[in-house]
Length: 171
Image 1: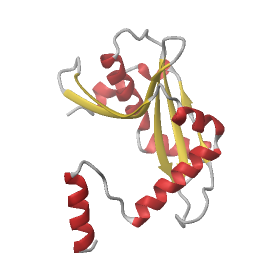
Image 2: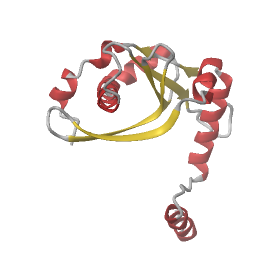
Image 3: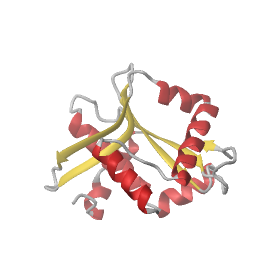
Image 4: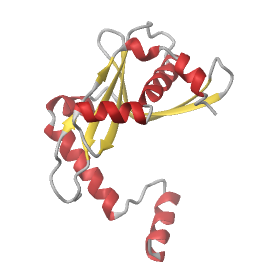
């Protein structure tokens, strides 16, 4: 990164903004194209009742102070809540993403995010939290069109937080 970029980034951050590199901006553009190309993803991200990039801090029952940031969260008409997390991946193929899910331990992220949501919204009934990934495939050349989008869905089965306790992900 050049000195000019670093100075511009510092200035942007002082103003409460983020400055992206050219490559990062191309990935963001690919994500937007991917979301707009997938009708259900587009509906999720255009939901006027959804809150975006919501940070939440809570004291976990196991003792540690925890923090999460949901990409998108909203209350459904049935009173339940849905968390949406945007992921970029080398492949949006659902079978390939399952392998990444296991390798990168996204199951812990799901449990952790759901645990945070339950702390933030104690009125949400057990089993009524849904977790939805929107997986955008990163093209090899960020200026090219998006290759694919997949949307693995997880229901309340991932509310079990015992995995969190064993992994000690709270700090």
